[in-house]
Image (cartoon, rainbow, N blue to C red; front, side, top):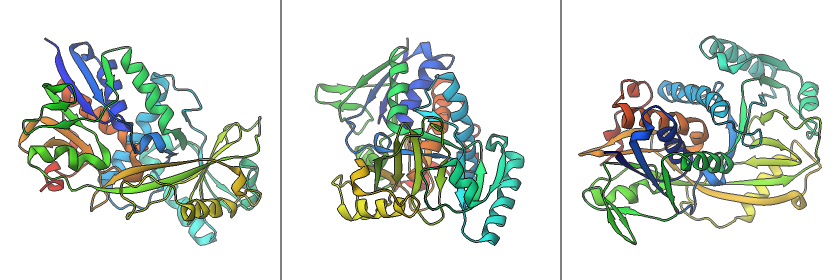
Length: 370
């Protein structure tokens, strides 16, 4: 008899888990049902940079997770045959205005490259070099180029993985569900039992798990970004992504599309309304590098809600006192990097019972619950 698995949440982790449960050996012995209403989902409103190697975070478990996540995305993009519009290793440029800071950044990059070969090549660039590689810029700063860095369109990534999973063993139901006290799924059509339930509900994790008698220590954070129409450079469709010092990320997607953002609003919670002040701030950040931009260039605004924990670390594992319910949350703004590798670990547990390496990446799950 096939194992019946329910996934609550169809963002970066839910889509990745569904994909792995359908493509890894043993997936033919599993039936997967994924529930997601799509409302406020962080991933569907996100585009980002995959380049964790120069992060200032001191949490080594997070860094190992993010580093392995970047490696997995390289492999996954090839395996799933993702188009360049979804995922592309364009390289990353991290800038510094102070020469001493720039040299320190270069030393950090060279040191971390020793155990992170997927960083690729490292180059020290002048402001002129940076401007030549990203001709959208009218004001550039010197920086470090990391060839292994990539850009990713979160919504397109999720859509494609779910499409492929549905050709295997996935049933996708676009609805919001809850749990009862025993971990069964409550739908409008009634109660349904699954052998395994995986809660990947982002910032709504606490609400989903509350009927189990546990409280997940997860808080919501509103994030907003803007998409702008800019000059197209047909011979430079794969410009590097820019992580400017003290500013919003600057992500050219080719074909005249530029993403700038995203914000981190701890007070915004689940509010999905647009903020003129935030849009003005995002545009002003972009204008400090491309003085030709105006509000007329804004094509659309995307808003989602991320999940954060008190220590800014993601967690995943078994829900306390509920051996058949698993959870992952707290990815924050690194979800596009860390989400797929967490999902791969959860898939290994569901299919093969393997969780030997979880301690490398996260603290015991129960510390994130009351």
